[in-house]
Amino acid sequence: MDLLSTLLATVVALGLLVTIHEYGHFWVARRCGIKVLRFSIGFGPALVRWHDRKGTEYTISAIPLGGYVKMLDEREAPVPEHELDQSFNRKTVKQRIAVVAAGPIANFLLAIVAFWIVAVVGFSTVAPVLGPVPAGTPAAEAGLHSGLELTGVDGTQIRSWQDVNLQLIRRLGESGTLEVTAKPFEGGAETRYQLRLDDWLKGVEEPDPMAALGLTSWQPEIPPRLDQVASDGAAAEAGLQAGDLILAIDGEPVSDWLTEVVPMIQASAQQTLQIMVERDGEQLELALTPRPKAANHVVVGYVGAGVEGVEMPAHMQRQISYNPLVAIPVAVTKTWEMTALTLDSLKKMLTGLVSAKNLSGPITIAKVAGASAKSGLESFLSFIAYLSISLGVLNLLPIPVLDGGHLVYYVAEWIRGKPLSERIQTWGLQIGLSLIVGVMLFAIYNDISRLGG
Image (cartoon, rainbow, N blue to C red; front, side, top):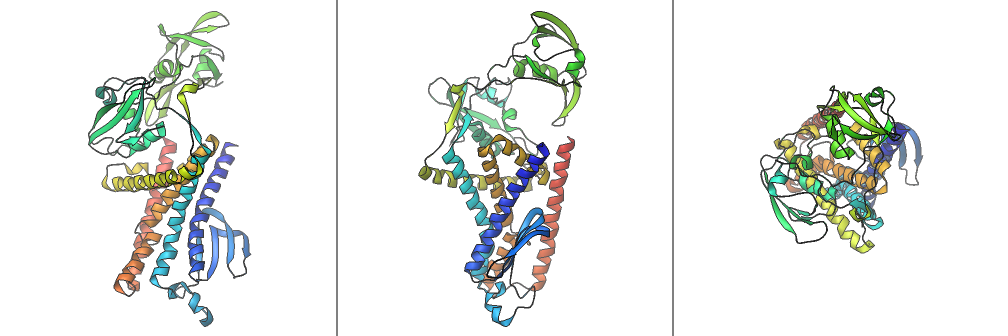
């Protein structure tokens, strides 16, 4: 069922993005008087097809990983004389630029609409209040401590942990000072804290900005009473049962699952721990040997047991929403910021400040699509917006075969007063195709590596 829901979420997400992108090309082409021969969502054999009164064929094809709009063009096939004025290649260079640019622009507009819906409907978030700050981390050295609520990062207002993460991602690979503002959660004046960065997480695969700085989210105490015990796990093998309350590990009393029990288990792979538990009013001592498990390229202990989650207290939760008019500039600003962040991340990948291992392919996209769909409308719409922005930015890169490459050709034609030679355009096409195929294969390799790690 999980696989089916993940596939459905992926098809819906990619189908929507491709349809909007291609519809941008289609809509402008029609208004420029260009005859559209085919509007296809997906590639390969057509599953469904129909025609409109203008002769355009619409198809939904078997492979939902893209799409295209095929226009009347003398460069691709002979065009009847009475339809020459509807041919793409006969249109002015400005009209051709408009048609090509319309696809990426449609993706940015989709992102604005998605962010607008999220802003109007509203969403719940957890206040960015600090939990324990590990000694020796940049956050601790700057003076940040548990109980402070983060209010700003580098001059940008912070309202959630997502905001914190986005601002930190901007600084990956950089040196200098990171300015954080915070105030006591129960009320008080804001204070500025300066965190020193030195080639911060430069080239690191799958960086965790918050952990690297020592920023942890405040969590309510979770009693270590087991709620789930896997029948084939180390916990069951040791005799632990659902309902057991862990009192001590190796003689050290524990009262919180996340901050005390989990770290001790993870640090004890293949090492026997003496666990004191309370069961039905009696105390029992059991020997537990956590099994090794790879997590983020590090081996940690794992026992196959979990506790029931504890709801975040109401005073730590926030409901954020805007009225429809105010939500418009909020959505536009969010789209602009995410576009700038995407471009900056691409630049850092090219210069080595951010590891190219962070480049994701279809497998990762599918996993994120499925997870965001399960998390609710806000998460799924935000994912759609982020992916749409990425698609828009990618298509505007000046690489032949992409919209951006065609724009370069047409702008050059506009400046020169004549098109670039067929030989140059053919070379560009071959180079661009090689680049795109290479990047796609590398992204898929990264996906498979993540599955293995």
